[in-house]
View 1 (cartoon, rainbow, N blue to C red):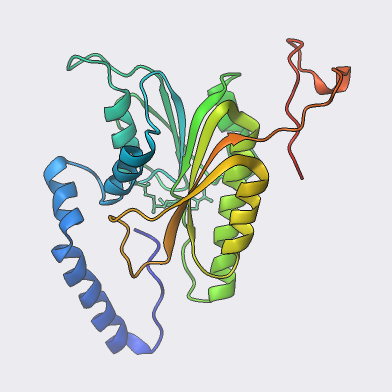
View 2: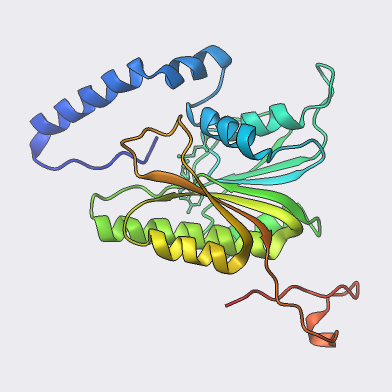
Length: 247
Ligand SMILES: C[S@@+](CC[C@H](N)C(=O)[O-])C[C@H]1O[C@@H](n2cnc3c(N)ncnc32)[C@H](O)[C@@H]1O
């Protein structure tokens, strides 16, 4: 995965850090479980745990998976949306996006691109068409530089993009799950969640290493400001009132 913190101090220390990481990884019960269940990474268990608690995933949903590679969360989504019967496909839609390529997963539509770029957003929006989204999940994390302030700013940037996308595309009863890191910028992300969602919860699944600053924020029911009287500028072609984002 590309979120390993860069280590300074020469190749000796770097090798020791890498060896320690490999040893911890091989000992990790979630790594073993992921191998056993055929998940592409241990991240699957974070989503499974959050879903067990918060009942996020149901058949029939349209779900957008931001930062999806290598694909463990998409695998979980596919399992949860699967129609009964072995070859029956899914009931709903899963659209996954990542900077990196992702090996195909049946029934998962994949878009490779950088979510910070307008072109990626446009392609994603055209894949979705007019269909409103039930759930947006973002496990996006930047490549860490080791410079805390720069890393926090990149993380906040990704979280804000996820919030912005979700508020524009979610159904009224929709939800957004976003990975963020405790540290500088965290309270601003929580604040942004509170501004944009009627209900906000913080989740730290057991599968997320306790030493890691990683935390998930779950927002439900996006808040929207609707103009009091319909006006032409705020309606789309179908005469539907468009939602206007809160500042
Ligand atoms: C922790 S991994 C996601 C793991 C994934 N949830 C899974 O279960 O396999 C984070 C991913 O975010 C992606 N990412 C980071 N910045 C991105 C961006 N600007 N646009 C799209 N994807 C991004 C990375 O390429 C990386 O694959």
